[in-house]
Amino acid sequence: MRNLKIKHKLLIFVILGAFMTSFLGWLFVQLTQSLYDQLIYREATGKLHLFSQRIEERLLNIDKLSLSIMSDADVQKYLRTIKTSPETYESYSSSNELIKKLMSYHLSDYAIASITVLDTHNGSHGVGLNVNGLSASDMLNMRDKAAKYQGAGIWVGGTEPGDSFYSLRQIREIAETSMEPLGTLVIRTFADKIIKSSTDASDNYASTLLIESEGSVIYPPKNAIRVQDLHIHDEPNYSLITLHQAKYLAAHFNLNYTGWTFIYLVPYGTIFKDTMIMKVVLLALYAVVLVFILIIGLQFSRSITLPIEKLTKKMAIVEKGNFELDKLEFPENRDEIGQLSRNFDKMIDRLDTLIKENYLKQLMLKDAEYHMLKAKLNPHFLYNTLDSINWLARMNGQLQISGMVKALGNLLRSTVNDKEFITIKEEVANLYNYIYIQKFRFEERLIYRVDIPKHLQDLYIPCIILQPIVENCIKYAVEPAAEFCEIAIRAEERPDRLVIVVEDTGPGMDTDYLKKLEINEISAEGTGIGLKSIHERLKILFGESYGIAIENGTASGTVIKISVPYMSTPA
Image 1: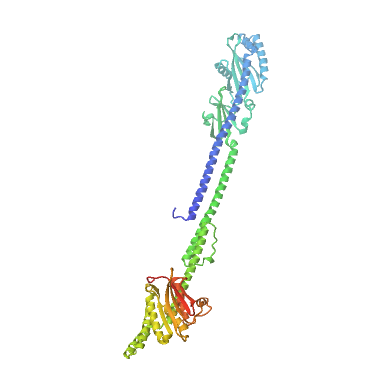
Image 2 (image 1 turned 90 degrees about the vertical axis):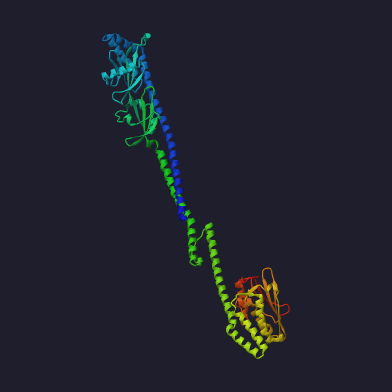
């Protein structure tokens, strides 16, 4: 990870952040849907349970009818007659009257298909549709079931599952509370009418109702589903099942009165259609947000890494020695990286300027040294020649010539020295040799004076900077003068520098002479070359604040001030 580029790190961070955000969003959708699903399960289960109770209430109403029939005095009387006087006229007449009585009850509820009374002699007395649809064995089976409950009502499914429900009740004699069995009441109802007339609440979910009794499905008709295939449990009263490769919500209720189990199969898609749409919309929205975050993240990453890459490219260009960055196109931002790039450009521009200035200074220094060498004589040849002349003059007794030649030789010897810096004492000694020679020429007209304190004479200054200036004084002050001319050399101590002053009493010179040389307003001739070379040499060695300054004297003449730093050791 540490070796990856910043853009790759940012890209990984953006992708991880985007996917983490999307994952949390997806997790939120899943949890929300799960909670919503549980809410829908409970709501749907509650409504279906209410629907089941309505069906049970419908069955209870029919049971009340069966209780009314059982407790009817006429029905009791007719059945008692049939029981006590079988195969008599009274029995036949009671049977007809019983049928008429049952007819009045049959018309009270459209969901009742038929009402049948089975007497104690297994005779059947009924009204309604298909009263003889049940076989004798089915009737006896129902009589036995009703007898187990001893007058209480019981509901059973038909022999043909799904088309009818049967309410069974044993009719017992109420008179004198003997409770002797008088017969069995069988009320057959239309199953579809019982269920569909209760309520249409279940239609909101397009559910399928299964009614199970004693391990088998008694409703709907021609049903191919087995209860065992549903894998339902008692708790909770709903579950998600897969049936025939389709997903269903199975809600089931055990009703106490009938003992039946009502099972509702609700297609998953019908109740969760809206939630599925919402889920798809949310997931699509999160996908769009993910793509948007990735795009924005990539742009953000590029906004950081691209300036860094450009800055790296600049550095590579500068590393190759190309400082002309202003010729390259590098658009920059206004952020910290852009500020860094701009500062780098400024630094390179400054570095380029300094390099050029230093290069020019070196050229100027070489040029100054060249001009100084031009001003010098060939010291080796002349020194050897002058040494021979000195000994010849001494042999002939010419002491003045010998002294003059010796001074010239000492002066030339100093030019052979390769030292860049010498002490002020040594520089003054060299200057004395030059003045000694010049005094033979100008005699009394040249007055020379040096006033430099001893504690300053051990300081170092550049070699041969006083001789060209004194030479300039002699040329422009002593030579034209008819009377004597004084040249004075003194030192001024200042806090930040040492100033050596060369002053003459000649006619003076232009104080802007050096400035005009710098702007090429005039050209240097003669010893002016020396002044310019010394001035440039000092600036190169010590900086722009050092060099030569030309001033006018208090009365007349020229004052030349040489500014140098305090140097106790040679640089």
